[in-house]
Image 1 (cartoon, rainbow, N blue to C red):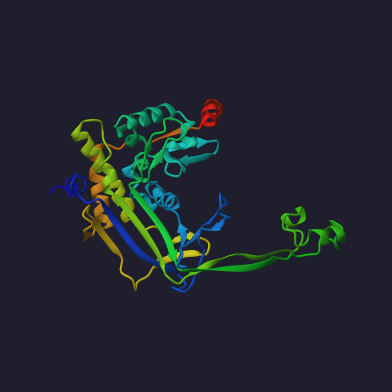
Image 2: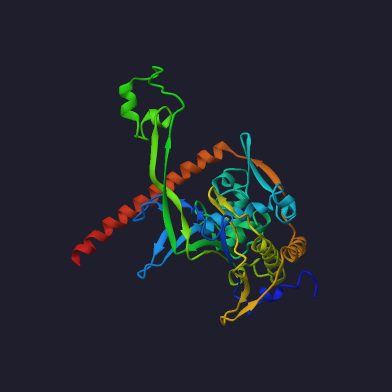
Length: 375
């Protein structure tokens, strides 16, 4: 069996539906240590803060790191300055230079669909690539932004082409006990005594963290009952899935040989990302390590539901990815400038589309009103 064909069973129609990794984590301080989940802005009926869902029985699950956040942590591994550059040869290095800042497409939040990329000389190429995706050919997109096929992309501002995530990872904690914490900022000197402002202004500002004096650090500012992390009595688990069934939906037009080469290439990238051990540091107060008392699960999941243990090491994944990338042909690396005029045009076109949708919606409502009254 050659290096190229060793995982072809994953690409066959009757192959496994997915690869799944389940691993138990815990705070570096210990299983009963405090960890800080992600905090989210309020929206709808959600008041903001930690995302904790509780079922009728009282059991709860807390989102520690979302699927989008995990993808954004893993994807930069393909950059030359990450992981000692050992994965950089697998993908084209596309960089947009905006002023003094250089932004890799591997760091752009919306990947190939991000505004920073769309407002560069790559705009027309990406537009054509996404249109090809709609026609059943992902080759052009794989030549420009192959990780968009691995971690998912939606060209929501233009063609509406959408590709699902092949690799997805999420970290959750079970049976959490939310904690609160208090703190107070104390200025090093009494600025009122130094006549920077009056005692009256000081008394009015102290305790009000929205006051200008508090915001600038001139008065005492208490912070009581703020988010203090959680203790996960039920443990912390990372669930990662490599959706082979989703990967097999990728095509390079109607050419079987090109389609196989494309799928092998994306499978190679996906395996490298999937088997990579991500950093346990998620944010301040959330440094997670493996729980050695709970075994790690790595299995093939078949359509029948059968689960078979599998071992694919990062080394094996890299060897396969290197061979499949060579067969497919990695796209050209380049640095392109951000173009302000394209951005201005994009904003105008977006505004027109928004107004057009609003007008159509209004006209539709007006047309429907007589029918609704007749009913």
